[in-house]
Amino acid sequence: MAVYSSDDLQRDLNVPRETMAHLETYAALLTKWQKAKNLVSNSTLPDMWRRHFLDSAQLVPFLTDRFSTDSKIVDIGSGAGFPGLVLAVMGVGHVHLVESNGKKCSFMNEVNRQTGAGAVIHNDRIEELDPFEADIISSRACARVKQLMDWARPFLKETTEFWLLKGESVDDELTEAQLFWNMQVETFDSLSEPSGVIVRLYQVSEKRN
Image (cartoon, rainbow, N blue to C red):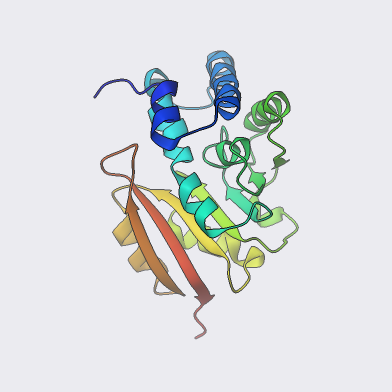
């Protein structure tokens, strides 16, 4: 598979030039900080525009079609900012990044500052964060679907949707989650990974025993 570039991302998702400049700043910071902070797997760096930036940015068309720019997004387990900080850089709603690792939060704060993304970064565990109503819950490579839904419970309102980037185990995870939660499920093929899946959960409510 050919290495995916920033030019490819700009073409595939029709990203404005100014936004691409901010994403390139983000990528340069990731390369610089990775040497000392081990923010992502080293094996992903040569293809980071596909593995991290396209993987995150592919959510943008879905979210901008369905939500206003005032929407509140809670990104659980943000790590080095994927997907939440990419969504913030690309102007998708008011993004709250939740990450318990201090060095990763320091990195995201620097990206946030240099790109003017306007994200709110919480150096906390999601269970310890004071809850508020969210329009969107996003997450990538953090936890199983049921766990994410349990963590998100205090942030949910009737119209909250989950937008999750998942892999091959997604069917098992959804089967498990549906034992405890009512939900409508919609899935989309990932642009970044043949085995990847974008999962939309909506009309979500907890089952009462």
